[in-house]
Image (cartoon, rainbow, N blue to C red; front, side):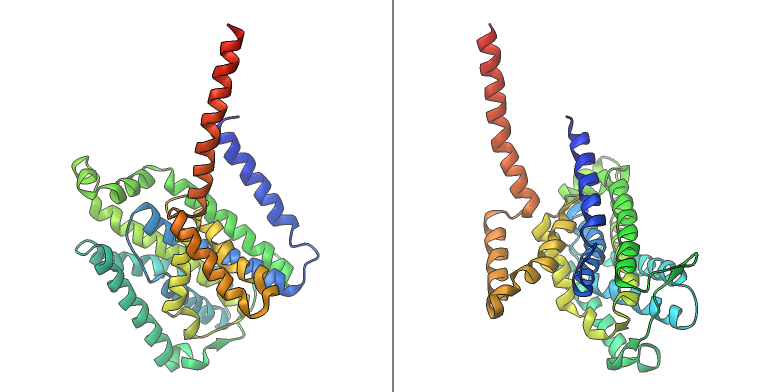
Length: 326
């Protein structure tokens, strides 16, 4: 079985699990699973910016906030959710394009400070502009969309609606990272000078990395608006950008399945550990620290190390079998 066939089989099994696991679950479990899918989409965008293009961003939660508020305002005005979703992704794409310009002049931790400042500015605007955002009181009552007479009002229905968006986002993400753009992103991450010497337009690729990654964040925010049906500035503060960053790093930055695994750890693992009562956060933090110490490349890195240990043994066995036949 080739590597391509393994990936296809894994994707089919994972999709089957995502379809059947929610059946019969209570509303809270459905909410947690839907949140995981939503944050996986946001983490995909940051993985494109950070993991593939090598550009540090601490502003992904702010793009989720922009997307959530734009969608909320449009749906509360009586328009369909799709218009809010398209507007959210379009606006965050443009803002991400503009935010990418500082990345042309500053790098590494200096760029992190720029994006941190942007996240703070967005938070302050959301909190202080009461006439538009509702200030600290936020916005409430965003409706869940209907499609051709099919309602997503119930939690299970909304879960499957988000699952469809997740599959579409994952397909677009897979296409991007395997396209010439994706190869250019990787070249920019590894060595910008060499990439430019080989003819890669590093300015354009840097801007695209920020813009596309931001649009993924805006799309995730558009989902959050009808999911919780209440948004306020605190939901998009810096701590949430750091949480999305943790998802990418824990899962494996620069790997396709990294943001999905990382989001599962950050969103689902604390729920699994709740049986430990007040100790679950300490256990969760300790597990993350151990993972980062022994595998800086995340969960995907652990899998690769295991495969590297298994393959040489398999090759030795094949050689021994060939030798026995001689």
